[in-house]
Image (tube, rainbow, N blue to C red; front, side, top):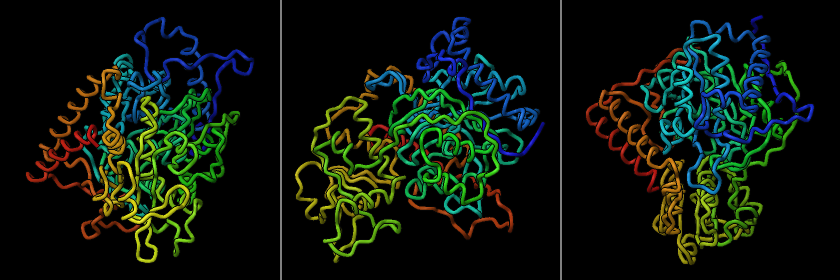
Amino acid sequence: MESTRSCVVITHPPGDAAGQRIDFLKDYVALPSNYGSAAYFSRPDIQAIYAMVAENLSTLDAQTGFTRQLAGRQVLLKPNLVTVYHCMGLQERDYPETTDPRLVDAVVAFLKRYSSNIIIVESSGRGMPTRGSFRVSGLDRLAHHHQVGLVALEEQVTVRYLLPQAKVQQEIIIPEIFSGVVSGEAFYISMPKMKTNLYTQVTLGFKNAMGTLPYNLRQRDHHFALDQKLVDILHLFKPDLTFIDGLVGGEGNCPAPVDPVDSRVLISGNNPVETDRVAARMMGFDPAKIPLIQRADEAGFGDPQVEIIGRQEVTPFRPADPSLLGARFHADFPNVRVLIGHRLSQAPRVETLEACNASLAQEMEMACRGGCLASIHFAFDMFLREGQKQDFPLVLVIGAGLEIQGERIHLDRQGKPYTAEQIERLEGRKLVVGSCGRPLAAHADRFVEGCMPFPNAPHAALHAVTGTTCTVLTPKNHHLLPLLAATLQMTAARKKLYRLGHRLDVPLAEGTALVEASCPSAPGQAVIPWPLPPLTSAEIRQACADENRALLATFQG
């Protein structure tokens, strides 16, 4: 039976209902050295995973007929490998940040019954080469075992489209391999980890598409507009199938390392919004209060008639806490004075100094959750996971400051206002993060440019102002040398494409750099191809130089 109706399927482990719980808390980040052997496939957890995957996808197929759609089409399977935290020099050996490779193995085995053209595709976070992620997770060995393709998207030629219906992400560039998804010639499976997130509260199926965007385009509008930016991508392409890895979930402040949740569930569906909605609910969150899902509903991507098969049992996840003014952050870093002030359109308006208080400061802080705020919290969370000392003194400044009675004002966690001159007189080293704070850069020991900054830049800057060394960049990271080699290989591959004239990305710039005069026009068309012009000789030199600077920024901030 083939159907276009929306369906979500929930599968729990065999034996759980009878109290025969299989332990899944092993090898959920990286495949063991004996992967592919008879001993590996005879393990109880592996046999249970294979059974769960087969049950889940067979049930979804019975309702939607998706396997018949695979014939003659390329199948792109995209896990989430933003950073594979396995033996990386942190306090714990593993953190459940990325899609479980045991599940990827079982899903590929299932799909091979129906397709001989399967490619695993991904682009990890900036500063983490995907070649390295494939190696750390073991997906390179998995691809060899199953004889399927393996593609690092940041090393691919790109194509551009115009999305007239988009509110933020009108200009979009994606790897050329995904043009088959846009045209319907390829079948796209999004396979994210079930986890919480500093930027968007939860990170599930359709947010996983962020990894299809080139690096600079990811950073464009990666601020208060992030939720809408992610929804806009759905105008270009949607996952044909979303398969959410909730076998071992992740709770905490992703993209920083998160803690494991023994959530023990797989969720699949053919509507990405409805699949994410079910997963968010099963994590203990109200989907109606998650802006990412709200924006998707407003754009009409949900389906109220969705059929849900399986038990929606709730396993509460600890939410991400992006606040730098809250009690938790203050307890962890008692000597860090955080000063925040925004003049963004969505920030609260303040007329007098007397109106400043702690509640106002907290409201001000959340005016740009998707940008500098979360990337700074990531920096401090990494500090915790590295086991660094937490009692260092620091003045941290975010935002351009409020305008009150002709003065530029920033607020501390109690709502106490500070002028630029008062900030300058405060004791301790000073760190200013984000392009909004550029006017205060002269008062800082370290200024991190960008909106948003390079993902690792606040983290590197924090090490610089505290005089500490990131343990990920020491021999404590068992993968340090292979990752450095993979970074150099990635950079070389990208430079090779530049020298052939390929334009892989948008310029690194703040705001939405859409030049209306040069846009193609196709009235009534939701997706308009917009060819990228070849690079000129001068642009090739600049692109290669920018590549070198981005490489250095990974380590220097």
